[in-house]
Image (tube, rainbow, N blue to C red):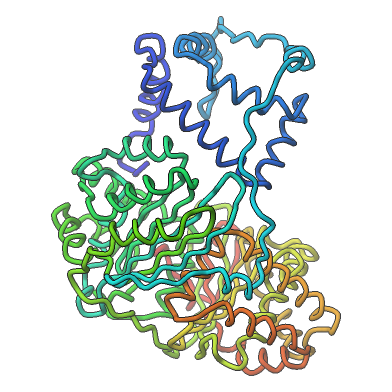
Length: 579
C-alpha cells in the first residue's frame, strides 16, 4: 500500500468480501471461470514432464499418485451448490489468520473430516484419455538450423518457425515488434511505459476479465507488454487453440481500449512501487549503479531517471498521452515472430500475414545505439534505514562486443567465478565464510556496439557488507595472480556446455535465442562457433583475458543498507542518504 492509504481499510474490505460468502452466493459464471482456470493449469502442467513428475510425487506423498487425476475429475464435476456449501462451512472468521491472530472467547472451529481410505476410493477409478506425446527432439544447433523455416513477410515481419511434435501438442511463440528511433522517442518513455502496460487491461472488444477468461478457455498462457522501443507477446498454448490465441493477441496489440479506471489503477501501482523502492536496498544500489555507468541526458530514451523523477513523470502522464503513444508508434513493419512446437507452418504463416502483415508502423524504426563510455569509478554507501538485509554491488564497463577475441574466455571465466552454487564466489563468500545469502557475478556483451559489462552482487546482513567486499576483492586478486586450475576449467567447460544443451531443449529459452538470432541476422552456427571456442580454452587463456580486462581499481562499488544501526563505518565521503 502507498503510505497515505489505510492498510486497515484495505484489510477490512478484504475480510468483508470473504464474509459476503453467505449473503452473496457464488454465481454459475464465477464457478465456471474458476474451474476453467484451474483445469487449464492442470492441462498445461501435464504437457510439462518435469512439472508432471513433481505433482505426481506430491500426490504419492498424500497416498497415491492417481489421486491427482481423481481430484481433477472431481473439480470437473463439482457444482455451484457444493462450492457454496463448502465455503460457508470452512470460511469462518474464527478459522482465519490475518497477521495478528486474536482468538474469540468462544470460537467456532471448522471440523475437518477423517481422511478417507485411499484404496477404497480408487478401487474402480479409470484415468482420462492420454495426451499427445512429444518426439525425441535432437536439440543440436545443426538440427535446429535444419528444421527452422525462415520467412520474410511483405509487411516487414520476419518469421522463424520450428515445427516439431511436443507433449500435449504444445506450442511456444514470441512476437517482438520494434518501433521508433532516438529522435522520435525523446521524452516519451513514461508515456510508452503506461501504454505498454495497459495493453492487456482491455481491448475495444474484450474487457480485462474477458481476456483472462478467453485465454483460460483456450488453455493458453499469454503475456503482452510494451516499452519505449517495442512490444513483446509471449505465448504458450496448444495446436488446437493456436489460431484463436494469435487472433486475440493481435487484438490486444492493435485494439487496446485504454480504460480510464485501469489507467488510474496502474498509475497508483507504479507510484506505490517507486515509493517502496525508496527504502529498498537492492533497488537503491542497482539504480545508483546503473545511473553512474550509463549516463545520458534527461529525455533521451537511454536516460535512467531517479526514483523521484519517476514519481513526477508518472504523476504527470495522462491517459490521452498513453493513447497517443500507441497511435503514433505501434505497428508491425519491424519485428520478429518465433514459433516452436506442434503447428502447421503454412497455416501459421498465412494467419500472421493476415493479422499483422498490413499493420504499418506510423514512424520509422532505428536501433538505439549504446556506445561504451568510460566513467570514473564510484564507491558509495547508501543508507536504507530499518532494513534487515543489505545489498552489495560492483560493476566494470568493458569496451567490447561478443565478436571480440576475448569474449569466450570471459564467458567461461565468469562462469567459474560467479555462476551457480559451484562457483568460486558462492563457495567462498557463502559456503566457507558464511557472509551472504546469495552471491554471484555476471558478464554480458552486446552483439553490436561495444557496451559490455562485468558485475557482481551479494545480499547480506548490513554488518557483513564490508567483509563481503573484502572477500570478493581477495578472490578476484587470487584469480588474476594465479588463474584457474586445469581441473577447474575442464569441469566448467563440461558444465557450461551441458547447460547450453539443456537450454536449447527448453522451448521458451530456444524461442528467445532464435528471435535474437533472427534480429541480428545470425543462425545457430554462431552457437556452434562459440561452443567450439569455449571447448578449446586453456587456463592460461582465461587468466590472460581476466588480467587484460578486469581492473579492481576501476570497479564501481555501491552498498545499500541500514549501516548506522549495524555500526558499520564507511569513509564519510562515500555515504549518502536514501535516493
